[in-house]
Length: 79
Image (cartoon, rainbow, N blue to C red):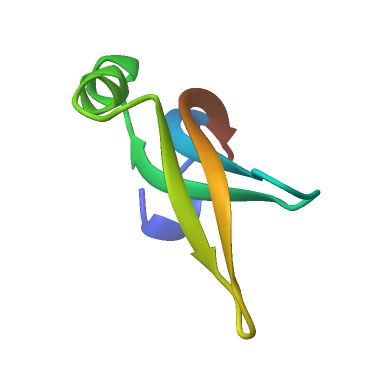
């Protein structure tokens, strides 16, 4: 079977996402940190990092204080 005839199955991926919420304002930012092919590897990464943490988001004219939270999300990748 050549590469044009290969069938792809939908795959599951586990991504670690950090959501940042501005401390005094309305801004919310979402950042994908890493992706894994197993929930166990994603959870191991999560266990090595703080779940919630303060951060500063740099914008062209200012920096914003944010509170960030990480979590693992399961997604389906179509091929």
